[in-house]
Image (cartoon, rainbow, N blue to C red; front, side, top):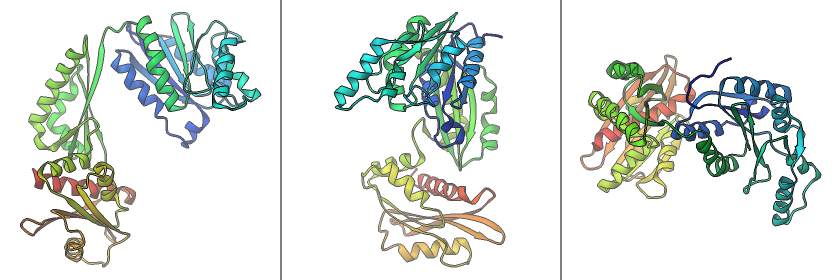
Length: 397
């Protein structure tokens, strides 16, 4: 087999049959990948496997053949279906041994909580022979590191709170000692609205051919993200590379870019309204309350978003633009705000239409937009919400 790079490479194996069924979303892997990148460790693979000892062992053997660091999450609990300890022992040709110090830690934790430890918790004190034990002060599942040939297997709990704590306080200090970082990897995401992915690509496609930083696009419902990832010998160098690309992207896209990283369109719009001392209210038809939901989440009880009315379907089967204006007139008094946004999804024999309208209290004007929607009805409400927020943002700007 092969090593992907002469720099430390890593991969993540998420363990748990519930991940394969779709019952639980694997947020652990995305968090770990972000932390590794910040510390200059290149992530090459992410995989998920069920609770089967031989399947887990096979995944670990493959990972060890090509990566310097293998991180697993999950399968360290006390139940019969927690197979990680045995699978790692099988993959590295070791036996499981009882670690008395781990048993004492588990027992003392239960005593501290005033609870009696079950017999099956004793399983958690067994780790592969020669493994480095990691105490878990925020849970009952001890973790461990197996140094195998020139690679390391690091086994973390599946509970996100425990995983994050141990990654920060135990695993990363260990990895930084063993693999001193030569590069820093940083990422910045620019959010755009109002243009489709192909149009954004036509304007900044030349940036997507660069090797460092790497630029990629990701389309959502009415929003396109521009992800810029840079490698540098320091944070300062990586930031400089990102800033250079961001500046050029802004030159080509202008106000189409509305935010960066964790900023949402709703939060940006509400911040602009708050600065100018204005408020907003919404009324929706057939949208499942997408617009009101985004604004409530972003408002955080500041009171910039005043009120939202949500109806399950349009009140009449007339032209959607006429319907929007009728809705606006009907509820203008109830929604007394500086701005009112109406959002609607209308299904007829010709397909799906979405529409938005904006009322300005200062000049009593109403602006309306409508368009056909070719996607699934489940996504139409979010599209309409983002179009409405963009209409409001343009008005404020």
